[in-house]
Image (cartoon, rainbow, N blue to C red):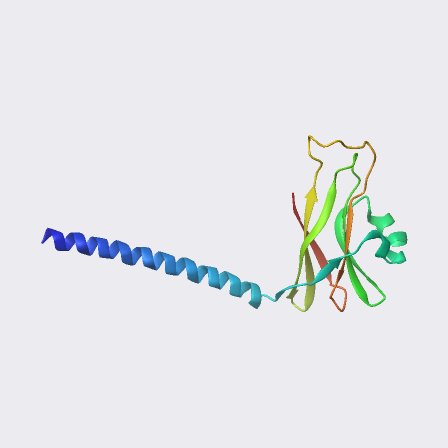
Length: 155
């Protein structure tokens, strides 16, 4: 009789463990589905080197926004560019790079979410004491400008 109760307890514990795993898996699937249902799409992009930048970006936009920490978009020759600026920095060694861009639709408005990594100089690295303005420009596959842009920073 005692052995049967022990077996029932073990069986009950296994069932509970299996249920917990199933619930966790369902929650994961639900979270992924919410991303798709919510209208979030990845935006393809490619980094643009300094030499390939359109003159409108180098002459007008970067000088105006380089002292700010932000993401912005502009359209040049039917191409949508995203620019991430890091602001004024007191030394070399600071950097910015765009990792991911996603687009979400809410109430008929498009919000662009730009995920960027901000790098700081390493303590062991030799740096120059010169004011810098880290900037990253990427060319996207978007057909039109978004209504708003959100910058999400990772250090």
